[in-house]
Length: 419
Image 1 (cartoon, one colour):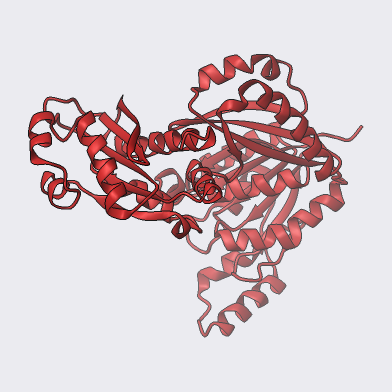
Image 2 (spheres, rainbow, N blue to C red; image 1 turned 60 degrees about the horizontal axis):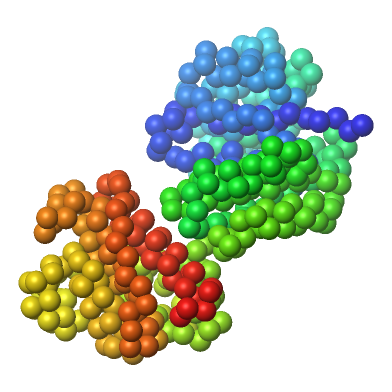
């Protein structure tokens, strides 16, 4: 039986803890390790503190077979990764002349002078397997300690990625005889909450072994991640496909796509398929709906444009909404939303139009509390739907949530041939 290796990733750097830099290295490494069947059990981030870095390494060796460390290999005093590992293991660092020559060559090629502290980057552990850095100065190292493999790489993403791609992944496949792959697929659902979806597929979640099934929530929608481990990518994908069909047999009516497909992509594809043009009138969303669509390739085929009618004046002057309607009903009203959708459809000669009006906050407007939103959809001389919602959160969350709800409404109307 093939051994199951536990992998761990440690990011070293106070800037990661302060939020100044996102820890994208961990995500990237995890994704690449899944391709070779290596399971990541832990992610850690630690600041530039010798004792804390050493403690992280100590914890990692007791629970993981392979530990990937990124960061802390630079020339400055706060780069402490080597020193922490030396303190933990009692290993002495020594100057590697070949590495030092490489560093000198790098600086010469870039018309820069080597400084004294750059010699620090040529200090390596005597028994380490050196990983060449072809685009930077700090080399990587692979060192074993108490049956745990430690893989040290720079924190600069492109340097780390070069080392992983060119050396580390082939090295691991050879040394560990890795023959399995781990594949995942993210099924995307909208119009159903996480708790409701999980309840509906509880029998599948409870019985999971391989593939595994996990519901995940995000703003306004839900995803189900299916992960399979197999000898080949084709086998893993077949397992995922079978499990996907089981899930969709129960909650398929809420499904709109998988992996990188977004709800705006799904809406755009349906508009193109049905050869329907779309326009928008946006008050509280202030152009966010238009931005969601025009960010996608192909939007120009179907999206006519958007009128950001944020003020009452623009609603009257550009969209030709009667002043009496606004005085009688207010701008935050079902009547205003209907009129906005109808008028923008006519102005832009669009087959379908959607409108957004409401109160983003933080203060109430026209007696309506923050988070009050009206969305209307118009087509072929009639208003198809106008809905009122209450979203809770700050003003930007309310705006984004409104756009997501508008896309959801469009998707189901188009999917069910009601538009």
